[in-house]
Length: 87
Image (cartoon, rainbow, N blue to C red):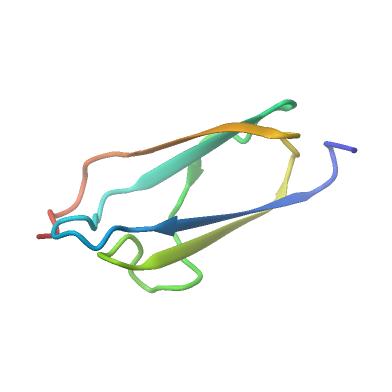
């Protein structure tokens, strides 16, 4: 595989349905694989919902023209604790 060619990553996130599960914080992910990692990806614009990470919804994010990380070995997800608390 040529890891210099454009690779597309599609990330789906399902937020729980328990009270307070949603967030207005900025959410990020790094995908790690045999050829390296993607670097920090900001999950900002959901393809499926206007307001991402709300209670009991699925959000989809697509990143085009990325370098291939090869076979994925892990995924790190975090947020910055900003925004209001959803209760």
